[in-house]
Image 1: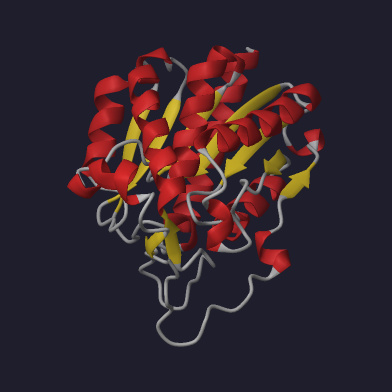
Image 2: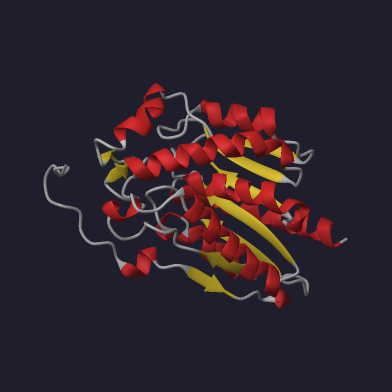
Length: 270
């Protein structure tokens, strides 16, 4: 079954926008410490949604690994051949590289990227210094999600979720469609993650947009109820929609996440 596009087909993605990013630490900017930050984009997105944040972190002296998840950054059809397990493995690979080359590692992520960072935290424990998530997705109130195991065999994709951004002119360059096989795998991964949230004890900084048209309040409720972290803070973004990393509150996210990273890595080392 083919999904017709309304209007002109989307332009090919700019390779420079969707390319992964890998930069070494500059300990001369971080008090002699080598700190690595794993930066993870979300479902149907790509590194374009996280590049300004990643570049800000690199400019502060942090080593950055920002991988492109399998099935992303090409055509939406490719995403239906990838699974939650593939994405988890990609994040673990990026973490392993950072851990081998740096003293401490922090993970930051948007939407599903935030969920993958939390998955990493549940699996790695205090080997990870902290996690900062922006509008992470771990649950949903949508009833139609329960139909995905059936729908994925009938319909390849539904209209996309990209560009929920308040700031005029901003573009995350995400897919125009939501592939259902991949979405079904993602929600299965979320269900497994919710069961493991109590395993997360490391510091967590959670940014949540007051108005988000992609991730609903159920994810915030799940984090507040499930996490075991004693160092957990939820901060509300009043001037951004879902892709807050490209929205009006982005400068605040960059500055406050950097403060968080500095604090938790100092505590880990001290």
